[in-house]
Length: 361
Ligand code: IPM
Ligand code: MG
Image 1: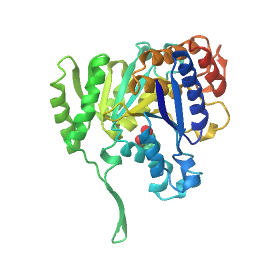
Image 2: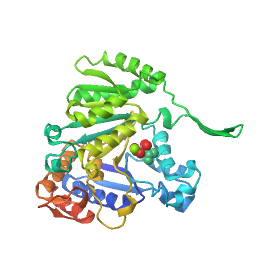
Image 3: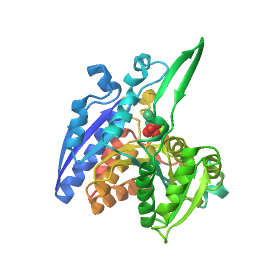
Image 4: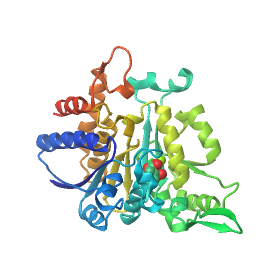
């Protein structure tokens, strides 16, 4: 099979971790008889430096023409990087929001898993972490507060900023259906998270989720207020299977959930539309402080590439092989600095890529 993949190395550690993911994909191609065709595009700061904008229309067209997009990370240090002196619509993050919208990537899947081998890195009390957890955060990605109208005005000498949060029932229904579909393949439980005690958009969210739930009698579902959910994630994360939520709540809760695993350098993500097309990226950011030092953990990007094989190409065997290689490398005692603990061998980004390549047979 020929896999047409657009790559976005991006900023910070992005280029180093994407290089490792490509190496792993090339090994998969060699072992399983596929052909990888990569086309790189610029996004974020890397695009600003060349084109003055964080994402060009040509880059979007290239991405659209591919079967899937594999991304590293974008953005820089918000206090020191010149990118953040630009007006907001020209900053690195605007490129990411733009590509999500342009490709209609409304469903963001962010798994948060406690790896047995890395349990020591989990910041929770042992009586909580001992139960383990494995949840999928399903975040709506192209609506809500991040895409509503916004402006800053001056009313009689008083500065005033307005952001709008809008959802229509169709936007809610399509992500809810994805959430219940994914739950059917997992432990058949959905926790829909909202702020229905205050927000109209949340009350509509709840109503539509209840309608969708009727089509999934096997799935247990519950509603949870977002503030309570933030608490439950540290109190009893084992209770969750699929967390289904809107854009901003999902942004915040997915960072919390990944921190709770203690190994954010391990967590992948997928952003999907209603076809097989998807954009795959690690859940972590561009870590400008460690960029170019060959010490970043490439595993989240490599696991994102595995999600790509699974969701965009239906190559389950190949995805399993990548995930098994990751488990094996951990079992063999190799760790990048972010997940290192006493008794393990510390390796850099390139070396970790090599070790994974060796373990794909
Ligand atoms: C994320 C990031 C982005 C978001 C930023 C960089 C715009 O935080 O993917 O979670 O908020 O969606
Ligand atoms: Mg975020």
